[in-house]
Image (cartoon, rainbow, N blue to C red):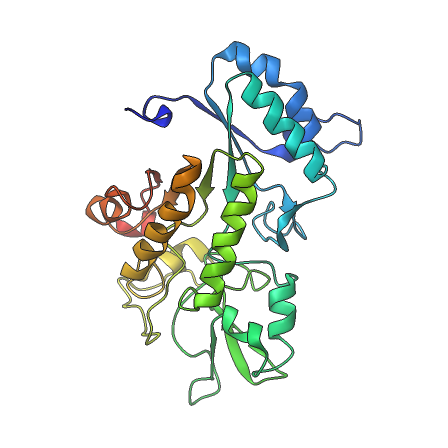
Amino acid sequence: MTSWWHGGIGYEIYPRSFADSNNDGIGDINGIKGRLPYLSWLGIDAIWIAPFYESPGLDHGYDVSDYRAINPIHGTLADFDELIADAHARDIRVIVDIVPNHSSSEHRWFQQALQGRDNPYRDYYLWRDPAPDGGPPNNWVSHFGGPAWTLDEASGQYYCHLFLPEQPDLNWSNPALREEFDDILRFWCDRGADGFRIDVAHGLVKDAQFRDNPQRVPIQDPGNPTEVFGAFEHLYDMDQDGTVDVYRRWNRVVEPYEAVLIGESNPRSLDRVARYVRGDSLHTVFYLEPGWMH
């Protein structure tokens, strides 16, 4: 039997600006619910809602401080439950965004990790000792500019962040973290979510040796984050084979719910994209061809 998403029509919703139900100037879940008749009239099969989680909001909600809570500016879990019920009554499925490469630095996991090297949450993130000169442990760079490492002066170690310093990367080699996300997926599926759009799906697992990325071309403008990021061949900070194993596990988690896994992915080639969608991992991907391939 062909799954609905093979030919389904999706509609992306950025909740903050889509529809405001209470006239406070900020879009919300009840606003989305109020537009369901219109969305049904359009003939869509699913809505994909960009992050609505609790978040400081430094990166449009992609800095999540609680994966099981709705940002109060967007509503409540009860509002979400009502949205699911109303959408399903109109044969509209609901896909939610999930951000597994990194959390917010305000997430309780990271706040606990800052308490010291012996804290059990320390290993939820990627920590390394400084290089011999005291600088970052390797040459990885952030998408948003500067090194992909920030020093925690209290412990004397650097933590990794491929995006903002306030978005520390999670440690996907840690079994406890994998179990956390199994539970997070089940939490939303149990509430009726029909699938997940996975942010930075080619991220997650990093090279175990934290090797330097090869530099492809000279950097002409060090102040241009896009140019700096594109100057490197990203062999070690993303698109690792272990990431595919994560999605095989996720596939088993969501299979009983018949939920779909959709990855936002831009590995180095289409051949590498195919590794993520070979039947037992992600169901499909958005392939965003990276500028640094050229």
